[in-house]
Amino acid sequence: MSFSRLVFYFLVLFSIPILGSVVRSAVRGKLRDAFMMLRVYLVVVAVYATVLLATTLSIPIQLLTVGEPQFSGDWSIAVRGIRRFPHDQDENYEVDFQLSNRGTKPIHGQSRLIVYLLTEDGTRFNPNPVSDPSTPPFDALVNPGKSITTTRIFVMPTNLNRIELVIARQGFRLDWFVIGRTPFDGRTVVKLQ
Image (cartoon, rainbow, N blue to C red; front, top):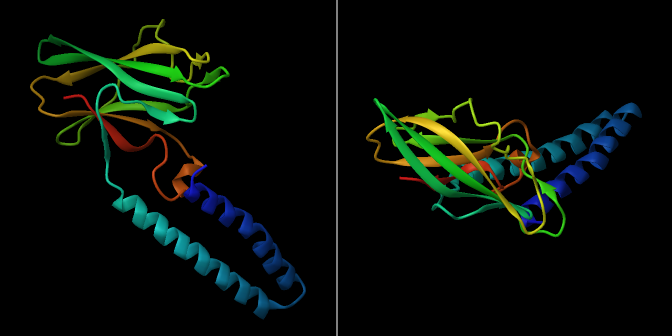
């Protein structure tokens, strides 16, 4: 477990007795003591939030190449191959992902994982929603020491100079409140072209 995650958990655990003490003081009629403890607590939370925001804004985008895995515990995902098929004014990009388990127990992949492509001007392209039913989802079960491959197809305009792939988790997650880089935070890209 990372140091920043330990700091976050300590702040959460620290919050419970402090807020309980504030409520207890307020119920007993000691409003001055309650407000004093609440102010100190809010200063600590404000300092943490400031550091969190500053590091989130200052952490550079991490650039990976094709084949470099991204890990979440024993589970990993890596881009293993790209195929391009031109048609009319567009191209199909077929991207193969290898889902691996380096652990000793079967595990499911990350839930709510999304992938998308970004062009040099920041345009986002989501995968084609019509996919092959035999293609496993990202949260498929992966046995110990094994890998499975899944493919996503993107329809892109032709003649693009730079294409990057982003793998991120969507929806609410506690990692938003942990200082530093977390797996699948959307700040890591794989350079495809």
